[in-house]
Length: 332
Ligand SMILES: NC(=O)c1ccc[n+]([C@@H]2O[C@H](COP(=O)([O-])OP(=O)(O)OC[C@H]3O[C@@H](n4cnc5c(N)ncnc54)[C@H](OP(=O)(O)O)[C@@H]3O)[C@@H](O)[C@H]2O)c1
Image 1 (cartoon, rainbow, N blue to C red):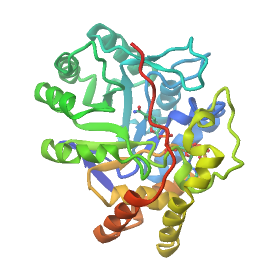
Image 2: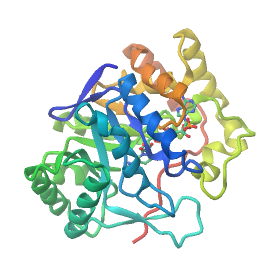
Image 3: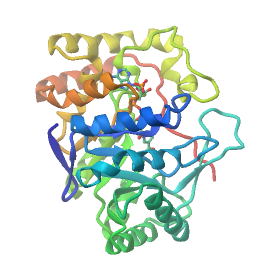
Image 4: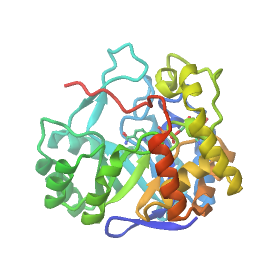
């Protein structure tokens, strides 16, 4: 797979693998050995960027995902870039399927988190370490100061901010250069395009999470799709409601039409749209199916011209769309 550079010098595969769904948010976790096999298959296919987090796990094993990613990538450690994240925990007292987040980026908490992550990931360094959510109680300078120390100590190589805004990003970047932002971005969620000029100015890459609008843009989920109400966040995501599927028919037809023209799939068009827009955008679609790993990775070979992207953007501005899942409620 072709490579891209995030920030100043982190080379990664153009499409990364979001590993969250193996353990968290998309129904029952994948059987452990099957998940190990899938992650290794991804590496063999040319994926080098693997996205995990301290909090991706199950009720029984809250850090399950890092353990899985560490084990799966052990034989490939020198050829891959491991992403993990610190700075949140879930409010497990909430009855909602998508538990609200409690941010906590106090320096002593970050210190404990990084040691735990390194151990579970079976590595002496994390390639890219994200603050999972901004903590309103901790100044960006304080977080960036800890990151600078961790980089000096060799425990992390690069750092970034997830769901970053401009002011926070600029202040943090002053203290310790930020390599990438990891924000939600898809044809259904384009609000962070407003940050593009800042990322360009500061030379910061963009790791795009939920790039398929949680799978919706693949066009493979119809009105009758059923999701587990206890473990699958999609059961409460607005874009999967039957009336939303109806509302989004024009969008799916737009993506599907271009897919036919390009001999690609709708998922590939959704990813190629962002890949071709900027050379510093790296989507990290999540999947637990081998054929979809191949399909999503193949998006790096689908080429859209700047005119085609502009036409798509114009259409996306006008097309009626349902609400889309927009992230987690933060409680403090
Ligand atoms: N920083 C953050 O706060 C944050 C938040 C959310 C996610 N993330 C990261 O971003 C990654 C991706 O985001 P996401 O998983 O929320 O959303 P996504 O990648 O947009 O969608 C994932 C969903 O789409 C399905 N899917 C994937 N490829 C498909 C294809 N080709 N055809 C049909 N369905 C397909 C998957 O189902 P199957 O597994 O059944 O294929 C899964 O249910 C996560 O894994 C996680 O690592 C980060």
